[in-house]
Each structure stands twice: as C-alpha cells, then as structure tokens.
Length: 523
Image 1 (cartoon, rainbow, N blue to C red):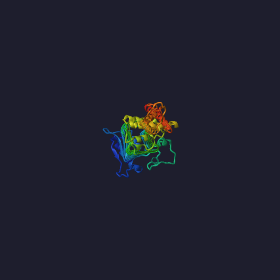
Image 2: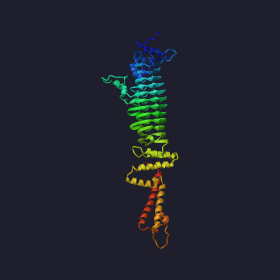
Image 3: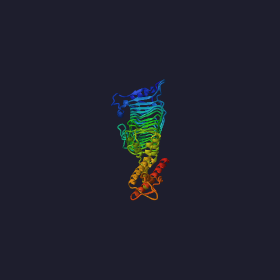
Image 4: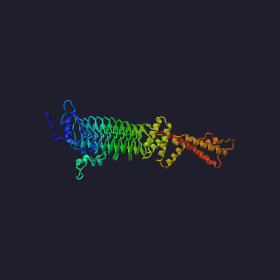
C-alpha cells in the first residue's frame, strides 16, 4: 500500500528527498559547476533545487518512517531550503546532514534532543540551539552564518566542529543586509524579530554560555565578525582555536569567565581584536597563546583568578595590558616580548618559570604594574629563585623590592632607605659595609700617619699607631684604648668625628639590614 504524503505538489527536489529519507540515502542537487553551486548565491537557485523547510521538519518528526532493515536520515546536498527549520522541543531519532546548502530561514533546535546535526559548507541565516542536547556530533564545518550561533546551556556529547567557518554577530551588516537575506526596512521590527535578531546578543557571533562539550571543540581557522561568549562553558576534551581570527564588535573578542577545559589552544596565529577574558577559568592542561596576536585599546588579556596547570604566554604580538592577578599557575612559560605594555601581577602564584628570561627581564616585568609597588610579586619571584637554588638572584629581587618600596615612603623614610641601600644594600649586600669600612680605614690611616694627634696624658710614654687609632675610631666600642689616649689636632678633628659617626652608621645599617632580611615581610 502506498504511504500517503502530507505534502502535495512536491517539487522534483522535494520528491527526491521524500523518497530517499526512509533509507538515509543522499540527495545531491548540485550541478558540478563550482560557481553555480556556491551556497552564498543560493537565493537565486530555481525551483528544481528548492526544498521547503516544512517538509524537512515533517520528515525529521516521523512523517515518513524508516523502511525495515534501514536507518532513516536526511542527507541533502546543494539545495535551497526556504523557511525556518523549527525543530524546537522535538526529540529527533534521525540525523540531519546538509552539504553546500543555502538556508534562508532560522534553524531552531531550542530545547531539542537529537542524535547529531551536520552542516558542511552551508550558507545559513542563524542557528538557535539553546539548551539542546546533541548525543553525537554537532558540525558547522566551512559554513557561513550571517546572524550568529546560539548554544547557551547546550550539551554536546560528541565533538563540536566550527573549523573554517565564518560567523557574524546579529548586528553586523552582513547579517542584516546580505544579498541572501534582504529585509523590508519600511516597517518597524516586531518583538519576535527583535528577539530573533538577538538584541541582547548584538556583539556575539557565538553565544554559548554554559555550553558543555564532551568531545573536542575544534574551531581552527574560524573567522568571526563578533565575539565568542563562553561564560561558564565546559570543554571536557579541550578547546582548539588555532589560526582563528576573532574580530570583536564590542569590547571583548572572547568572554569566557569561569570556563573549564582540559586544554585551550589560542595559538598558531590565533588573532583577537578585542579583549580575551578568561577570569576565573580552570584549565587542567595547557592554556597556550603561542604565536598569537592579541590587541585591545586597554586590556588585551584578562587572565586573573585562573587555575592553570601550564600557561604558555609566547605571543607573536601583544598590544594592551595583561592581567594575571590572583591566578594560580603551575608552569609559566613566557618571554620578555609578551609584556609590551602594563601587566598586573599582584596575587599571582606559580610553581615554576620557564623561558629564556634573565633576572633583569623579570625585574622589569615586576615593575610594569600600573598600580605601582606591590610586595607580593617580589616575594613570589624571590621564593622561586630560592627554591631552584639561585640565592643571589633571590637577593637581587628582594633588593629591587626595597628600592621599589622606597618610592612609596615619605622624605625621612626615603633618606633612610637611600642610606641603607648605599651602605649595605638593605642587608642583601653586606659586603658593601666591608668596602666602606676598608676605604675609611685606609683614608684615616694615611691621614693620621702624616698628621699624628697629640698625646692626652704626658705622664707615660706611648707609641702612636695610625692604623690602630683609626680602627678604634671606626669601631663603636674602643678595642685598643687609642681613642682616649690621643687627641686629633686641627682639621683632623673633623676627620675623627666623621670616622666615629661612620662607624656607628655602618654598625646600625648592618643591624637594620640584617633584621630586615631575617624577619618576615608584611609590607
């Protein structure tokens, strides 16, 4: 008995699709001419290549069941699909696979459950799939989507593929006035059209907050006119955006606060015009910006409060501020060129540093904070140098810390700081005190050898020793009883007083510097 059709007057193309669906066979309406088969020009295709969206909906909802022993499915190439493909709230047991097709309406999978959706080389207006569940593959490979993709709170059990696709945000001219989707601008937009246009999503080519992808999310060579909104998204097998070019229409190119992933590749030529924000992200593997190009008027990388096993920060070009504050990083691999502008480091902790970076480069890194001196980054870097056995570099960092802190003090504190720095390097260079002591001892010995002082008491005969006398003046406590036995004369009295004062200063600086080094820093 012939099965009835809910559609009459089917076009030749629709008749082929109807008959092929129960067996899942391909229907190829392409001509073989690349120019004539370009989906971007699909609005010009004739009736022989036109398929109504209503018929696709009916087939996917079971209007023509599978034949016994066969697996039904809709596989269509080179067709012009007219109307909205609205499968919202449906539970689909068959797969939809469109190749080089032109879809003038919206593909809606809101709250739907499906086995898999594949669009390859298609030209689409918009995809809405909020809260949908895809039990297999969701593919938009080499597609052009003119008014954005919505996948907020969706769950994809298989892979998510966006490689080589071109996405535009809803407010882009390409989405509004493209040749394929011309609108009647003489009438005001209805509320439904405003919702469809996504007035709350105007700057986002991909609106996917809360998205969960169990398989890999492969977005290599993606091109967007609009940002990627991935707040709270979970990529259980990684997010791969190598060579993607994200051109934001708002302040953010990537907005992925609290995202979690096993690995994130924003590398190999990844380009972002706008802020890449990953505040509070959790990456259990590698977060890589190797050979990336990132630029923004103010802050180009907002990477604060993250937890990352390994951060590779070796971009090809960076323009703008980098914020790493309060992040916890296992291994940080970077190079000095990664920090062309300001960098916020307060609260950053790391287990290891890698890269060809000298102590001078690291100190310049610490000095780029726009808020000025912060003690924690210096302490963290010094602790790492100690941990790897580079005690001299650790002392250099702590000395730089005291010098940076000095600029925050009032005039008396600054003067005391300059004195401590000059005499003992804030206790981190105690050998400087020995240099000053030796210099003063040599000068005093030479002067008093040529201009000896007079003896105080003449009742006993004493022999004057200029070296012992000068040493007695420099040491705060008299050791050789020379200071009380001889009295300098003339201008050498000033030298004697200078030597006594210098001795006290050296001793005080050594004690203060040693105390500063040994006690915990709470500054």
